[in-house]
Length: 220
Length: 220
DNA sequence: TAATTGATTTAGGGCTGTCTAAAAATAATA
DNA sequence: TATTATTTTTAGACAGCCCTAAATCAATTA
Ligand SMILES: [Mn+2]
Ligand SMILES: [Mn+2]
Ligand SMILES: [Mn+2]
Ligand SMILES: [Mn+2]
Image (tube, rainbow over the protein chains, first blue to last red):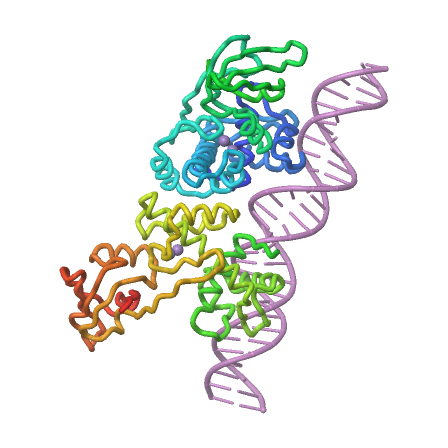
């Protein structure tokens, strides 16, 4: 049985996210940027993760996450997202306040705790930011999603997730009235700057810069 | 602002418990036994806690906890007991399963989290083992309690807490049908071995060794 | 292809928290 | 009180996780 320290779990989670989509390797500097630790520290950690065989690591050539690594990363992600749901649904945290606390909570080691929490929350499938929650086997219910800024004029859909979960961005969305679950329609697109105008719930019109729209995921 | 590492918090909590009741000092070996770490490690930690002024430490002569130390210890105890309530009340853990998990949870650093959790649980005053939960200012609602084995024949009362919270002891209580809140009456006492017979909720009769009765606290 | 640039690793060090073995101080006892 | 026993501290080591500075490797460019 492989066991990881909290720091190792955090690195592996970061590596998992960096590996998503592209099947090309992940570099030391990638991890360094994601984790906000120095490349020297990353090299050290990669060696350890390589020894534990959760990544395949070739010095100077980056890494690939292994199947075992994915499994473990998904366990940590599962816990993180379940705690985020708990904090928002039960303790009335707002969605921009939960990330750090959930991170700490997610390192608590107890299989039973995770299962009972999941059950208590009613087996939620998505976290407050719309990200899917892996089940106990690491299976994820994927949803086809598109970036809001890439939608055609006139198309409709539903906001299902955000790419950027920073408090600043989330509070901005709160302010303008965008939220997970909102039904939207693209009313206008400006070629020049990539900004869009969307109608929310057939009621409210919102203007959004390309930067903002590019961080909103929509299910068409 | 003094901040403590998880390990320091654990030591301070142990020291707080060792200081309860008696106003005589606490020795290195006392702490060592409580924490299950070697005396050498304890010496090291006492030096650190002394520097942070949460204890008053004199080499070779033991320590006294300071007012600041008590405050911090009570914060940790508060979190520990709130999480225990959460685990039992909400996640359906049994009272013998919660201690370790609650210990991990109690080190999560977030004032807001503790307050919201307290609120969510309805500001409970006692944990699943009957121990009082300090409020956010560290105030404890004390209950006058007596050891069951010291009660007079014929006296009645209510089980309010257990001194020993080990899984083995708690499971034994479950088995014989003793629980926090149970109304009891002392039906018989055997001088010879200190064992007692009690009637629970005017229904069930239970025989208890002195060892067991000496770990049950009763409010008369 | 040789030199330069940029990415990555290694070396060495700090801090925390634990340990064992040895030294030192205090307490108990003869 | 002198000796012995017990308690406590110090010394030195190691593991985890981070850092800076220096060395090394690989990729780019002239
Ligand atoms: Mn998060
Ligand atoms: Mn999230
Ligand atoms: Mn406990
Ligand atoms: Mn308890």
